[in-house]
Image (cartoon, helix red, strand yellow):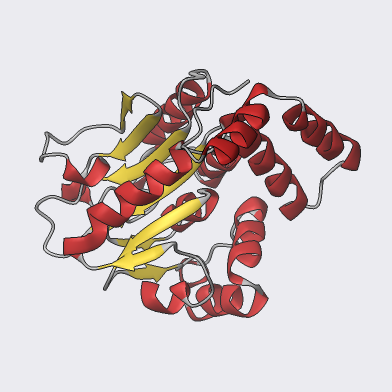
Length: 264
């Protein structure tokens, strides 16, 4: 599991695949896992590689926090890139958009505080587990920046308008315990319970019927973005009704056993 991994040399984001579960890990704890342009381009490649692997049912977004005095999942975009003529928000926006659209169920292992654009990576995931005592801060307006549109949409969709305004227009750190009250996290756990809670959530997501879970995820994302097409939603419903997985699910209920889904 992601946060059981030993400390490793600092480097670009990595991809690990273990059966039905893939893990993309941020690996620059000494830099608070800030993301430069090369990291963002690699993240896009890694998400695409996971999408192309039909065996993967769950994608975990994790971060190495070894050696940090206080755990930081990610400090967001490396602002040196803006000063040095980097690609900036346009490139960054593509990463959470890709995560949100990814085929597998995505789980964020928020193993520390999160800042700036990295908050949108967390919001782009389908499910989230947070480390107790962590904080969430969106300093865009304090830096003079109007955030990009898809990130604002995700904030309003996940937080609601009032809490989204508080995050942007106060730029104050928000405790993850406060955000849990609006349903943002599946669990907020102390260090001793974090890995177990994450493992349980990933196992539950991986055990779902993949055809139904992935089709339902796509429909929910489209509905939240205001671009759902009812004909497409009905077609996905018909596809699952006729699937082998649905027949297996019914048999499993009748036989009082765990289903064995094959994604077809």
